[in-house]
Length: 229
Figure 1: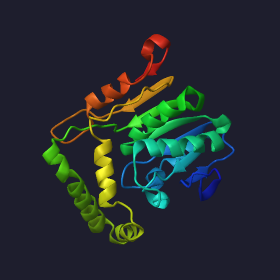
Figure 2: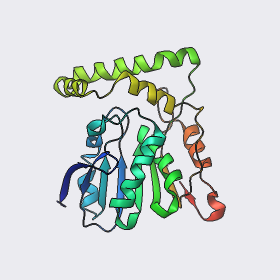
Figure 3: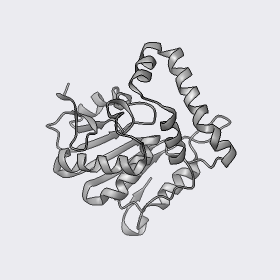
Figure 4: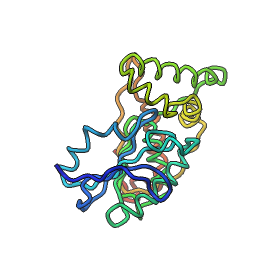
């Protein structure tokens, strides 16, 4: 297995781990909401086996970066860009973002541009348009749901998260604001954008419309040789 470096704070205070530091191409893995970089534990060995250099951070208000508050997509992107500039091979990285992390990936691509972002892979990028009355109930509903599931399925782990201040109601409120259709996506300057989205069924699935919204944010599109998949 490729060598790993213990988690450490970046110059901006964001906690992150490095895997296979001798690799010659960097991938930045951005986890989803209410979790941590541990989401990628099963993926890391597969990528390091291909000799990729990995940067795996904890987002603000998550994991070991829980003290960096409040959470918002723009702040997360601003903290991740220096991580790429300083620690990525040649100051450039492929970005993989999952769920809430996919929104961060889109913002980071807009901020960093092709100089620092090689490509973007967005998994489960979704936006929603709740009515104002319903939206007021979303944060406490999400908070109660994720706490209940955590306490039932992994009592010790969830109790530890609770004591550390992870998964708070305030974070749920920040996440709902992020996942609102009212948020305007900034123009993304990137050569390759890949979005993984499941088809909608009677169960809540990824919204194809959200993927299309992200595609439209790519500046230049196919006419400039960009690839969107």
